Image 1 (cartoon, rainbow, N blue to C red):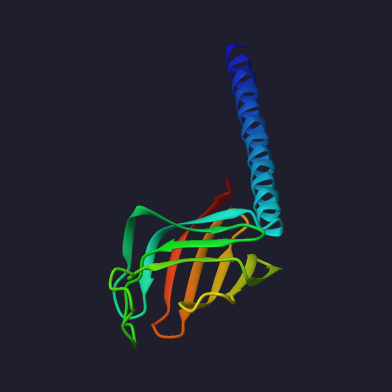
Image 2 (image 1 turned 30 degrees about the vertical axis):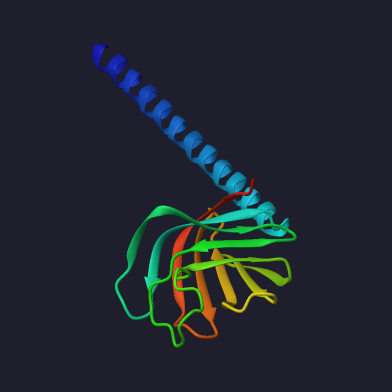
Length: 165
């Protein structure tokens, strides 16, 4: 009799635990879908900030970024404040201008949703420094950015996107 009661209690506890784990998994899936919908709305509305956490220069080792480096995308403006590590084929006129610092009001923006997230191409038309920016964003908001130039080696960044201010 004691054994059957213990067995019954153990069975109830196991089934309860499985039900709790199953409901947590469903909640986790709902949270992932909510994040994916939030990322999609930011990309479609052109209102997000790419926060760079790692720089990957073409000819060097990756560097963890400790500063507040970002690419701010709005409907009418793109503002870049990113570092640059790599080879420049011509010297800048301003010696203090060593990073990827620009503001653009004339640009093309195209986004395509793929299997694993979004592919975004930005082409600034009123900036001489950067030629194209390719941004790949996962459904969870993790992103990589590749910047190509007219007079420098390309550089890539890893990071994430968040809602613009």
